[in-house]
Amino acid sequence: MLKSSIVLLRRGKPRPRAGMFPEKYRRVPTLLKPQQGGQQYFNEFLIRSANDALEAQQQGYGSAFRVGGSGAARILADGNATAADGIHDGEISSVHPRLPQADIDGVLQRSRAETIQAELKQLVAQDGFISQRGFNERLWYEQEHHRLRTHGDGVEASPSEVAATAAASSSTAEAVSATGEGRAVPERILGDDYFQSKFGYSLLKGRSPDASAVADNVKAYAQLDLWGEMPMYSRDFVFLYLVSRRRNTYAVAYDYDGKRLLPTYTAGNRGLKGGDRGFRGDGSTDNGHQVTSMYLNDLLPKIREARAASGRPLGRGEKIDLVVRVMGFYNGRQGAVRAVQDRSADFRVRYLEDVTPFPLNGPKMPRGVFR
Image 1 (cartoon, rainbow, N blue to C red):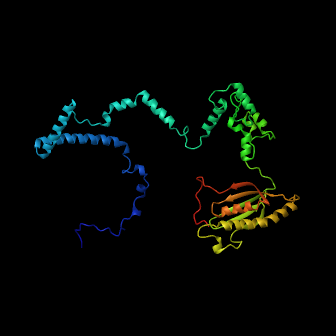
Image 2 (image 1 turned 90 degrees about the horizontal axis):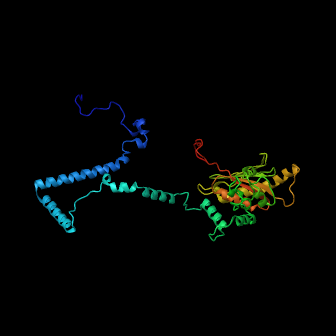
C-alpha cells in the first residue's frame, strides 16, 4: 500500500528508551569518555589561538589597506597616533605579544639554582608536619626540652647541671643527654607517673609504690607491659549491656562466665508502649533512663543472691563492680548511662566501653528496615 515511503516503519519494535542503551557504553569510566580530557592540551590551544589571532590581525591589516575604506582610515589613524607616541618617547613602539613559548627570560629565571632553593625553602616552611594549626606534640616536646636545658634564659646549661636537674625531677621525660644516651626507649614513654595520674594505671610490668624509681631503671621495651592498656576483668564483675536502637532501649546483664543474670528489659515489656516510646523516629531519653533504672533495681537482689550462693556474699556497703557496654547512638543511650550514674550508691563502674559496630569496609549490610 505504501510502497514508496520516506519514513520506514519499525515493524513492532518498541520505541527506544534509556534502558535499551547498550550496557557496555554505560560502564565506560568518566575519564575515558570523549567529552572529558583534553585538559593537558589547554596551554597548546592557548598558544595556537594567540598565533591564529596574530595572523588574522596581520591579514586584516593587509586586506584593509588593499580594499580601503573606513576600517583602513581608522587603522591608519591609530597607527599614526602610536608612531607619534613612540617617536616622542624616543623609540618606535610596536605590538609585542607575550607568548608562553617566547618567555625565555622567565624560563631561565625559574631554572636558576637560587630560585629553586627559594622554592624548596618555601615548600619546607609550608610543610604540614612542621607547621600545624593544631597542637604539634613533637614541636612542644622539643621546645620543653630546650627550655629545661637552658633554664629558660637561652644560655646552654652544663652537663653536670643537666644531670642534677634530671635527678631532682620526678618524671624521667626530661632526663636527657647526661643520663639517657644508653636507653633504647624514647623519653616520652618513660614518664610513667604522668601516665598513671592521667589514666589511672601503669604501663610498667613491675608495680612499685615508688613509680619514679621504677621508671628510672627502664632501659628497654621488655620492661614495658604491652597489654597495660587492655582492661583487666575480675570474676566478680557484672557486664551490663545497654543497647540503644531507633525506637527502643534494651538492658541485659551477664556475669563473668556469660550467664544471663536477668532477662532483657525493653521499653515494650516494661509497659512503655505507644506514645510513651518516643516521638516520631526518636528513641526517648526518658525511656532509656526508665528501662535501665528498672533493670538495675531488679538486678541488685539477683546479684546478692548469686554471690551468696557462690560463697562470696557482698559485705556491708560493698559496691558491685560493673562493666558497662553501650551499643548504639540513639537518644536512649544518654538516659541509660545516666541511670547507671544515678545508682552509684550500689554500683561502681569499673569500665565504660562503647561496642557500637562500625563497618570498616566489611561485608554488605543486610537489606531492610532497621527497627
